[in-house]
Length: 312
Ligand code: SAM
Image 1 (cartoon, rainbow, N blue to C red):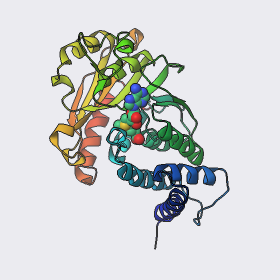
Image 2 (image 1 turned 180 degrees about the horizontal axis):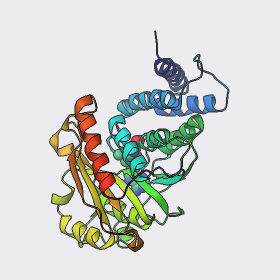
Image 3 (image 1 turned 135 degrees about the horizontal axis):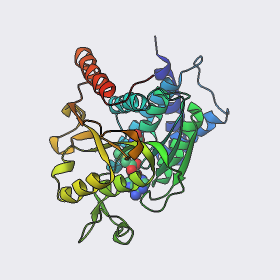
Image 4 (image 1 turned 120 degrees about the horizontal axis):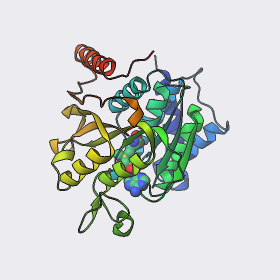
């Protein structure tokens, strides 16, 4: 028997394919039009009541198909296993608070953000920025279909933002050089010569948009602290942030070692909040390995308890 996710994917894929062929659109454009028509009640899939996760996963499969077709390497979607870890950590660090605000400054189609919002359903409101017009339109219609409260901004996230400080920033950062040297000049992490690293500037911009005591969870290159500008980054983090955790992600998630990523969790210092927490250093296990996952979460829970992240 087909699952709801499969039925929804077939529905989205069928409409998006027909529309893109008929109107000579990109598949992703056809998918956007299809999702919009669904959100507006003009077309309906033949499923019973689908859950938010079933809808997110079906859209994610269709977006992945569209991204493969248009080969947009910069727009790689954050895999579910990383999103679920991000959800778990955001929930744990929120200490069971009934409501927290989130922000993703490089949201793509929002898969990472919506995975976290669905994980903490009903307890979050979010803002998101994305530079690519089509991706942010898909993120907007996904927010409607999932009934998740998100304010979306189509702009360069390294320019001034109209986003109030938030409790959590969650972002799979774009990696590479930022082409706008004039704008980069506003950042402490700018390169002395030539282009700066976009992912470093994103970390600095994020720290500006966190509340005191707020947390930033970033998907970063595994070699973040060994790169050309690592010394500068170390100094910045020492002065402006507390490093809470560095979690190496399983190598199987990435094409090559050069593409390997880690999760970096930072806290914006709040002098009223007691001693600095210990840094959690760990290898995140393969999500399919239930035993390894259980012992990883036990380690995280023990670390959280010891460092003031009790849930009651
Ligand atoms: N988390 C996203 C998801 O689940 O779909 C994927 C994020 S992807 C790794 C990084 C995103 O950053 C891309 O969608 C890219 O278009 C966007 N981006 C790159 N430079 C940007 C900028 N200066 N301002 C805003 N977004 C940017």
